Image (cartoon, rainbow, N blue to C red; front, side, top):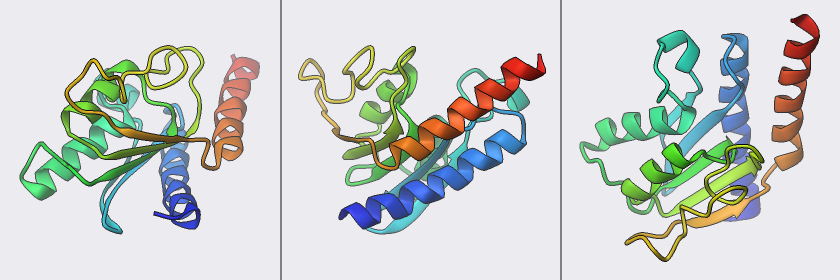
Length: 154
């Protein structure tokens, strides 16, 4: 896919992140695409669902797996506003996602670049192509604003 395509789908992931924020969740959104078709779009929901695994990426993988009737999603590209954690990175590898595109790095919990390099590790039997920084400034600004508002409100 081209840079404009990556930006188009990242903007859709940002829309999902806004939905998460409106629901009081950390604003992270994900969109899963295969050959230009959106298989799933989701946002963080661990607080509202009382489910620690309800990250945007996991919810998108679950929905796409149901849509395709397959837990493997080879050829698919996952767009996420924030670098996936190790739980999500592991799920991305297990699902055989081909490409991961993320916006902002997660310096505290990042499982793809910041703390670990799980998605494209040669220690595993599947490597994901990783593209980082697509609309990264916009993604980072949304998260920074969210947490700044939480600190001043509390």
